[in-house]
Amino acid sequence: MMRQPIQQRFRHSRPPRHSREGGNPARNRWTWIPAFAGMTKCVWLAIAILFAAPLAAQDQMPPAPLAYKQLDDPALEAKAQGLMETLRCLKCQSQSIADSDAPMAGDMRHQVRTRIAAGEEPEAIRSWLVERYGDYVSYAPQNKPIMWPLFAAPLVFLLMAVLLLRGRFRRVKAKEDSV
Amino acid sequence: MSEEAPKRSSLAIWLPLALFGAFFVLVIWGLYRPADRDVVSAFVGKPLPQFNLPAATADRPGLSTAQMTTGKPRLLNVFASWCVPCAVEAPQLEALRQQGVEIDGVAIRDRPEDLNRFLANYGNPFARIGKDDLSEVQVGIGSSGVPETFVIDGKGVIRHQHIGEIRPEDVPLILQKLKEAQS
Image (cartoon, rainbow over all chains, first blue to last red; front, side):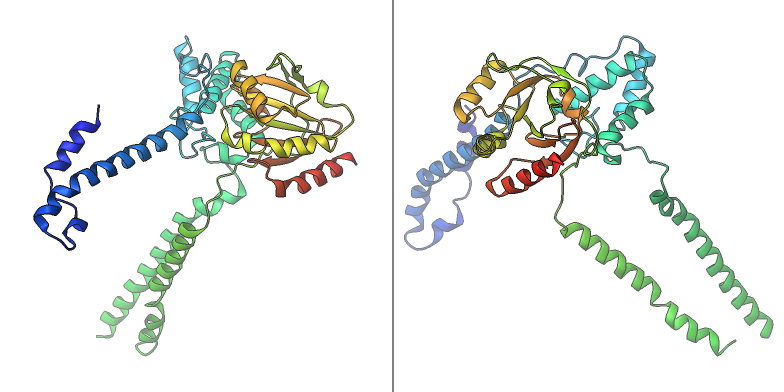
C-alpha cells in the first residue's frame, strides 16, 4: 500500500547518478526505472526485517496490573510517581521506569506501586533496589564520599576566581601608586 | 615587582590551554571507550530472596527458595521463550546438564504455549521451571535482562552471575564457579 506513492515520487525525480556512466543518456533515463523499482523492493525488505527483529524480541504477555494503572489515592500515587521518576530503567538505560515502555520497567512500576500502596516509604524501596543493582539504578544523588569533589568543585573555582581577581586589582593599584 | 610580574603571567597564560587540553582528552577518551551496558548484580554473595513460583509448564514443577537449598550447587537460569539469545545458549545448558549440573529455570513473562514450543525446539535442560510473570524474582536477585545465569551454592547463596548467553567458551568458567561453590 505504502509503496505506491514513494515509487511515484522517485519516478519524477532525477535519475540516479550511476545511470549517467556511458551509453546513451536518453536510453538510460528509461532503463533505470525497473532497476530502481527492484532496489526499493530491497529497501522495503530491509526496513521490514529491521522492524521485525525488535518485535520478535518482545514478549506477548499483558502488562502487569499496576504498570499503567495509577493508584486510587492521589497522595500515594504522587509518592510512587516521584520515586519512579528517579529510578533507572535497566533495559533502556537512559530512561526512568516512569518514562519507559519496556516490559521490565512496567513490572518495576507495578512493584513500586504495590509497595507504596502497602505503606512502604519510597526511600526504603529505593535502598531495596540499590541493594540489588547498586547505585546505578537510582538517579537521585547519594551522600557518599565519591560525590564530594562534585559539590566542592564550584566552591573551589569561586575561590580561585576571587584570588585571581584580588591579585589583578592589587597589581593595578600598585601600578597606579607607583605612577 | 615590575620584573617579576610578566614572568609569572607567561607561565600562567598556558594554564587555560592545558586545562582545555586535559578536558578534550577526557571527552575523547569517554567517547571512544567501549560502552559497557551490563548491569552487574549487587546481590552476588547474598542469599536468594524468598520466593515461591508456580510451575511454568505442565511437565516441570515450579520453583521455590527452599528447593534451591539442597546442599548441592546448582544453576539458576533466567530465560524466556521470546528471547533470541536464550535459544543460542540452549546447547551449552544441555552440555552442562549432561555433566551432572542441576539447572533450574525462571521463565520471565512467558505464555505456556510459547514456552512449550521453545522447549520442544531447543531442548529442556531444566529440573524445575518457575513462572515469573511480574519479573519479581528477576528484580529480587538483581538481574536486568534475559538470559542471565546464576551459580547458587548449597546454602542458597548466589556465588556468580553470568550476563548474556552462555557461549561454548564460557562453560569452563561456569563449571569452575560451580566447583568453587561446593566448598
